[in-house]
Image (cartoon, rainbow, N blue to C red; front, top):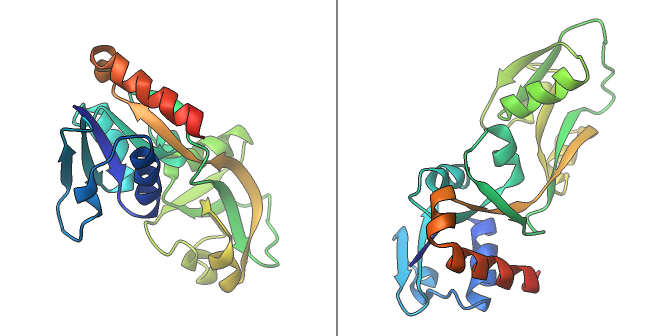
Length: 205
């Protein structure tokens, strides 16, 4: 039985649609219920629905053999697992954004609001820029509007939320997409099953 951690929400739905197409179906998962664990012995698969930010933890600790997670989450923390492949969907950008018309003062400490604290520290350290991090976990766009921060570092997909709040991207840090990850022990003991999954996905994408 291959244990797969699926992120809840739109990304998870897209991942399941792909896996269902490849023979890893579990019809019960599509039913209207509040279950979090779904199993189909015929397909040899067991799915866990978890919060997107928790997928890597479930895989790292062996509760799941494989999972799908955004590259932004893998970059934020040094997980001890295998990153197997880029799934080439769930694409977005890690970017710095500010109010339209913002002009940076290079002589002052830059105030940066973000939930991606480690990624932010790493980037600004690489350009030798002194910053003050303001850690937030929701409505990051509010920070520069209310003068809590000068800029924000966040994931940007279409940019519509920024535009609606009179903000815009001033610097793209990196491209982000969904990645297939595996537990290191599982990759040894279930190598055939996981490699078969990789091969099937590789041919499809």
